[in-house]
Length: 568
Image 1 (cartoon, rainbow, N blue to C red):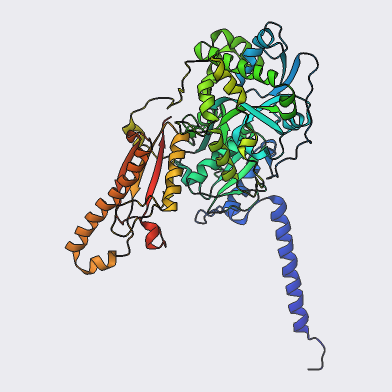
Image 2 (image 1 turned 90 degrees about the vertical axis):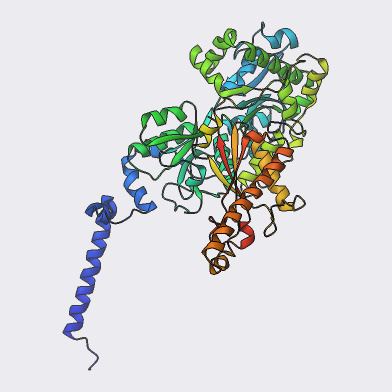
């Protein structure tokens, strides 16, 4: 070797450079052409990954629909607190067009100040009501004193509670069927959304609805930054939009494009019914909140205004209770006023009111109490929201007692104005229990109750058992139209030893295992019944040792599994 390159060396370098240039050209071409190599060849044997599915589906969706996707965000910062000061006898408030707010419209005689309204005649003030959908903007205005009152759901209040300086004097309604989850046809339970992607309007009641059910199913969630963000196969992946209507439009567009990159969305009426009608062979209505009482609307009043004007707030609460009574008794005379405010026909307004349960005084008193009852309370829903969102989103939750002021409801109770009212909440429609249980459970919840080996006695002194029972009791309160199937299990650590002792011995032990596992389920049922649950709502089943949790230690398989079925 004399240190100089040979001709062969130059030939090799030339070939390498040519190859690199060819590769670069190919990459450039395929990038701007927007195709994948496998998509071009149409290889049917290659399974599509999540990212492949996104790349094929997204170009077929209208870019204006794709633009509805927004990144995950922090909770918006509101304007600093200030006092609303009314001008004369007119009070400014802001509402969205939700039918649960109809009592405020009825008591005011419409959106504009009305001298003939209940408020004007009995309490000497009038409301000027503005309709709006921008909640965080409305709450900034409320917080800073630009208006006196607004409305929201308890779960959303938990998100903003540390910033909002408001009082909550009254519950307006429970949403009963106005919100729902629609999915691809093959998905029949919340548990099957694991690893899938769902569109939802973030930091809204729709967001909470899904988070609550995922929490009960033992599933975690991954907020996505956008369509191209990687999916987590062990979580429900959340793709965000600004509104529930946008979430429905996005899901419908992906279904129409033949893409399964979106497995579903959380939206509200009429879209929970419209989208399945548009795609009857591809989309199902998985569930609504008709029998899941976790979306509760409340009035929120500027705190400084409330302290300075307690008689006006008392009058607002009285007017809401009066109008609630009227609407529950006979809504027909008041439908034209509500329909005009909501920009609906009278028939549309009549139908939309079926999606709410307007809360009377008796139900309000129970809702804001700590007393055991048949419905979920403000505190229970509030803390469910805090837990569902987690400390990463709600970093400094405010204790709910700082927000609620019961004195207005208690004054009405003392006055006897609405004496005789009772709590009327229950399942929204009766169906045969057998028919319900023949369908698919809405969710399956893994709960481990502590049982000693070979024992069916439930240890009620164990903190874990106490927590599990408390969770189940709360779930049943929040889901009045539901049934539980309790499925008992045994650990399978001795199965190999039983088999070594012969087939006959093994079979005898297998029968005992089924009997013991059912007895464990019955022990849990007995405690639920002792705590006021109707035994007709609970079925039990024994599964023996045949369904162990893969890789779990023996004590985790001494468990009872809960399946929740809801009436619709």
